[in-house]
Image 1: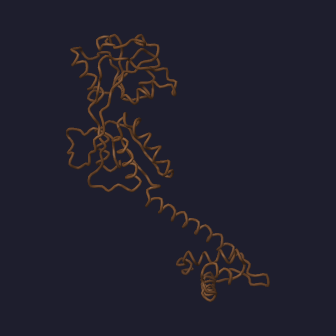
Image 2: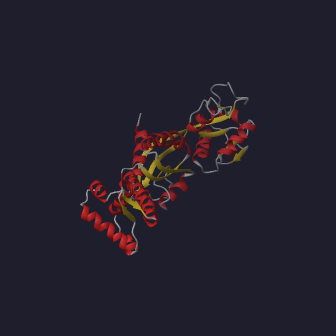
Image 3: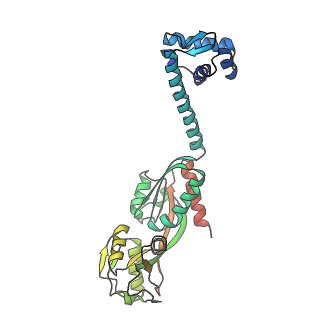
Length: 308
């Protein structure tokens, strides 16, 4: 059986062709072999298995029971090799493979989703993982190799020299409420008018929390005191649906939740004061070469950030 382990794909192809056409000469011709070469290959395989694969008769060559088994396995093997070849070509050309991306909330909605649609339009076989989280966790994950690239803010404690950092854009914070809230329909609402309501905000130290607190400080107002701390969007939506709570969210997320397609019955406050968060960046490891499919995805998101 040692010969079978060394059998070339072209030899298996010859066996399949003999089974198909029933004649050694025709099979050899279609495989671009001479008849003596094809005869020798068949003889070597039959010697290795210890029995004939085909019966010779007046109507041509017919498979024996052993031959039928070899043909069946040869068909599977060649099919798998053909699939492997296609996978290799897709991977080399960036049409397949795995991409792992981390992101803060805003760009996950505004940039990654349309970029994903564009990339999958020409590379439908890629396997994409997108994880949303705080910048500190994302940068740590990038450093540990869990992500190909991330959208995040660089923590002050992190040495940025280990990373390639591409400018992205700042985030605008919107205050989202349910559509039956007392402030619905009001225009140019002042921050001091918001103290009467409960808030649900990300934990202390988060960029959106800091931006909200800075806005109140700049207006000479105390920060909200009736606060539920949660970074879970599910908790935020549940509270918005049940009460007159105010939730500060990235502009892109607020637009998604308050838009007509979800039917969430949410809207935003027409606030007199603009609230912005410090810019986020597109970050990748300086010392790691991206696989082609990840590079294509990276190039797509960079082009979308740079687009006017």
